[in-house]
Amino acid sequence: MLNTSNKTTAPTIFIIFGGTGDLTKRKIMPALYNLFLANWLPENFAIIGSSSSKMTAEKYQQELLEAVNEFSRSGKTKKEDWAKFASHIGFQDADLTNAGAFKPFGKIIEQYKKEWNQTPSLIYYCAVAPHFFCTIAENISKAKLENNPETTRIIIEKPFGTNLESAKELNRKLLKIFEEKQIYRIDHYLGKEVVQNIMAFRFANSIMEPLWNRNHVEHVQISVTEQIGIGTRGKYFEGAGILRDMIQNHLLQLLCIIAMEPPTSFKANEVRDRKVDVLKAMRKIESGKIESMAVRGQYSAGWVEGEEVLGYREEENVDPNSNTETYAALKLHIDNWRWQGVPFYLRTGKRLFKSASVITIQFKEIPHNIFVSADSGVPKQNRLVISIQPDMAIRFQLQSKVPGLEMNLNTVDVVFDYADNKKSDSPEAYETLLLDAIVGDQTLFMRADQVEAAWELIMPILNYWEKNNAQNFPNYSADSWGPENAEALIAKDGYHWFSLPDSNKKK
Image (cartoon, rainbow, N blue to C red; front, side, top):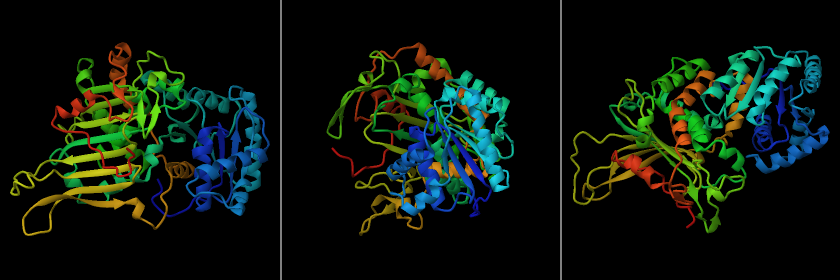
């Protein structure tokens, strides 16, 4: 995460394995193009796409042009801008399983080193299925491709393993070839503008620190809901489920940012150490208590915005008797001085009422209320609501007097809304993360011990759910807020799931 306005000048080579795939076309290439337009890329850079298909560089450039025109936040490309950008794009076919097929990359790297008369930063991007990560790393080593610990990086996408043991094995194999400082485990949620702003909000404002603890916070909710179903991802989702797909990474990373202690500096390892501290302080989940602190669900058929949609078990490549959860809610605790006794509620799911990512920090009631009235009742508790998507905003919900002769109170929102900030367009998450990879900043990337600690936390739930089939699946209809027992999970503590009103929701 850059904390100055200095732009990088070191030459950079991107080698993208999976260069013709969806991730490259929808996320990586639009992000690189927008960085180029904003002059964040170095003067000397090269992007080498790779796949098993043979293709000319011109044909590859044309495919990427169509993708950027469709998916870039900056809209359609300008001819002269694209021509300059495309001149840096090449293509090299390669069989990922054949170390010999990696040899041409070595010649390409050497060619650019001679042309630029400099040692470039080299980024191997694994935009491929997870089972290829280690294969690519091993073949980079076997082909003796550039692997300078100071200038070479490898980027891998989630999932980082499918359980604790596979995560440890993945880390072990990668760390035989690369050093930890070279491995960039990308979680796009951490690159989102509002998520980054949480740290600025917490640690750059002295007013927040006295409130950010068990003395003032009653509970915390982290809610990532999706209106969409699994689409064409049936085969993947059957082997994953929502607990692996969302909670093990995205939601637990958000929890770490909310709960972490102030770092002594903004250096990558200092920030990541504080996040690991949170995971280590999480209360261990006992198998005998899972039913009381974890809820799972699976969606049935229903209607979404006037269209009939399939239930999960009717989706393509899904077992008609599937035990895979498409919804999960957890109640977690952090056993440390700051958060002792404060429950953290996490929920996420598919085919829910609306798509939204919201963090809600609810503060305790005032110690003595002097404003009780028949009309307004007891003043509502203050909330800090951090909306990540679809709206990007941070709002304080406070109590204020309603204009008039009587002392009646009403909730008002004090809002910082990114939509109103016209100074610059907010970058996409991948723009932030790719730029950090170029300059060698790992602050927003997950470290091996962080990944393993997150897996260790949820393994008791995963094991319990896999051994005990849910007898009531499917247990929530599409376009609902999830299973009834998820409401009971939080209601038994006297709370309810919070969601922002959505005036644009179609009935």
